[in-house]
View 1: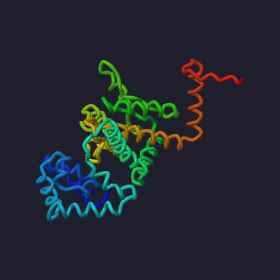
View 2: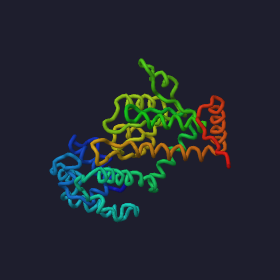
View 3: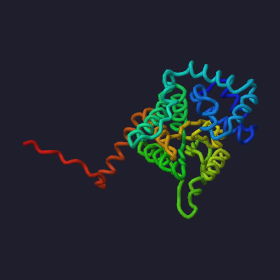
View 4: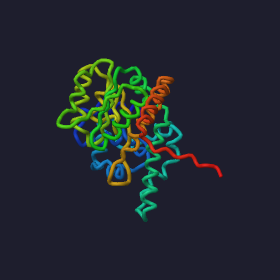
Length: 294
């Protein structure tokens, strides 16, 4: 969600003290929760003292945190319908009462994360990224650790559609070899979430220095890679579990390849047909045997 206060926070973010940066990210990444939850509960979730939220509000020009909260509440009320009526869900903090509750809570959170991709603002971001990627000479893909499968999905499905994708990976330090020729008219799609990969940041900085455009799939508009990027696709990672989720990142890439396929049209269909023929030549897949009619 983007509105005047969020823009002010983003503009001042680099000049904030470390603890205030943590609080500022919470505000920008969780506008609905800011509007609904108490300051103490928000401080607990953001893992900062409540006084940090108070000091941040004053630094932004408000008399106190409640005044800042009112601005967020007004923005949420004027936002998309998907935010309306979610107060009960957002405030519910039941203790786990068995496997069903644990799974149910996780599915509810994932449903909320995925619903953002149907919002006009997110659709516009994905469309902008797809436009850049369709026009690109080559699409370089990078992600490490838990982000690697997402980057690989972009590379693999993109290649099936006939897009010139290159996966940055390698053994014995050869990953950087793929970057020798990156430059103007190329795109780097970089996937990284907190804790952010130092290597991914280095690759992103190198690509941008060579004139390539950067599409970041990351968990916050205030993540380190966001400031380098031409397009930032935000993918929330929080779950009730101790583990973070990459499901929204996968969804973002699946939406991207769908948009790319629609833009490539018949070229994408021809590439898919050629790939299927190639796989069939090697008898790659076990196909179901037609059942004989009695």
